[in-house]
Length: 252
Image: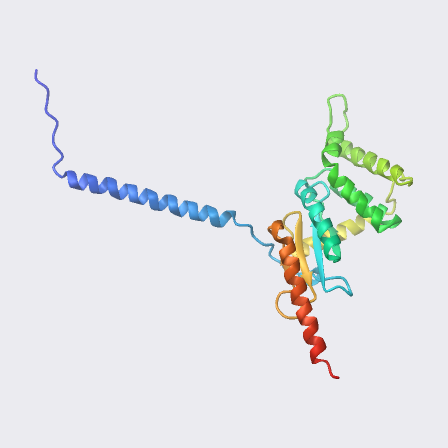
């Protein structure tokens, strides 16, 4: 039996047109997806619901306001930059605690930091710096091994307590076994946490450069930390021109 001849396409141009159309549609779809991905990957600012706390301390025209979690790796990365900026520009760095619920020892760390604050603000900030620099060490000490039947929360609490105790000894202090018997320090941490929720904090660290400006929005969120110095420069320039304007318009 002979081979059965294949039927010819009665309209090859139509087939080519369909292929071309599908190819173009695919390219358009890919371009749309790529554009959407670029838009969605752009960092978003925090929607501020209550801006009352986003202002400099009395007597300052510009300050940095940060909500931090002492167990947060990105907070640890931001810490040296903020410390250097505060020293270089001589502006206040207002630090608020915002311990995230899924971090095992961050709330306890904030309580210990406030205990050290009662000795001196300098020692309190040095403790925060030390915790950020030693997060991996604290995490490793808090890991529960098969030989340790204690739960992860208990192990984490012991790890941060031991770290705080060693830090205290190195600074000539005796850390009490119970540092907050009346839960006053814990209440202060919770107050910061509640403040952050009222503002609209969604992640840590959340950082703003805040000003005493009376016109326009007096705060800018630092989404891209590479722009921190640029944002501070602009804030200083804005408040300087505003202060000069007020002085110029004052009665002689």
